[in-house]
Length: 296
Image 1 (cartoon, rainbow, N blue to C red):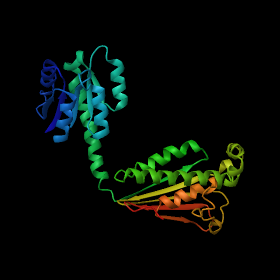
Image 2 (cartoon, one colour):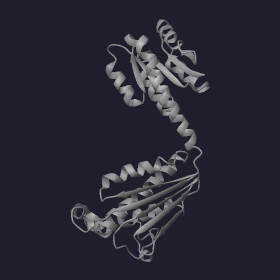
Image 3 (tube, helix red, strand yellow):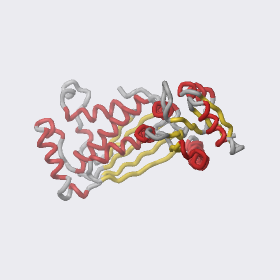
Image 4 (cartoon, rainbow, N blue to C red):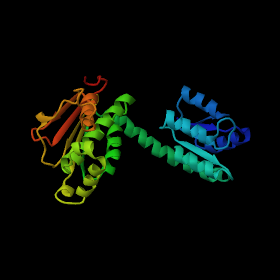
């Protein structure tokens, strides 16, 4: 049976909404008088969907949506709106609510609206069940020299690590960001990190200039990412001339810790379990296993 939780402080409106929803004999309807009571019921037994009045004392519909989105985002929430609550309704939709039905149109609108939302949510849950059983998958990207692509790509790769510790996800994100920046700036655009140490303004001016002139602007970054049940591997390959990996200074040497130019490599090597370069020096491969401490 599909379980719907109706949240409304008004007994009259609870009966009205309940009567509409009970027309579907495959749905079981439960009720909560307040947002806090709704959260208690959710803890006891997750409903398939929530229908909540937007305007309630103590915890209104917007506040309830924010908590549910944070705790159990898989539960869709449909809001019952009334005249004068338009701005709050929009805020609730932005915060994570799935849809809304005007109180004046409950009889005609709520059932088909909820049916549609449940159908979408059911398919999403089916996909999640399949994805939970995925043992390995790979992703490939080709990036032009546009630093605005780095942040979204890092976030996309981090999103594949759903069961990982939040601190690990953050550190992995930093290592990936540094790897992409190195491939773009130092690899494809051939702008040395020493210049940043000497003159940061000139460093970024040269980056901007080379993004527009060949052969630098025609080069691309190839990213190959693989994920297993408890590991991840990301390879970042630029089209620059490369360098001799054996010539890299030791980033942990106290003499190099004060240099901005060595920080990226230090972070990458510290946050990942294994870091490897190809012989040409234009590809770096990062490996991390779930739950392992950072490399010393």
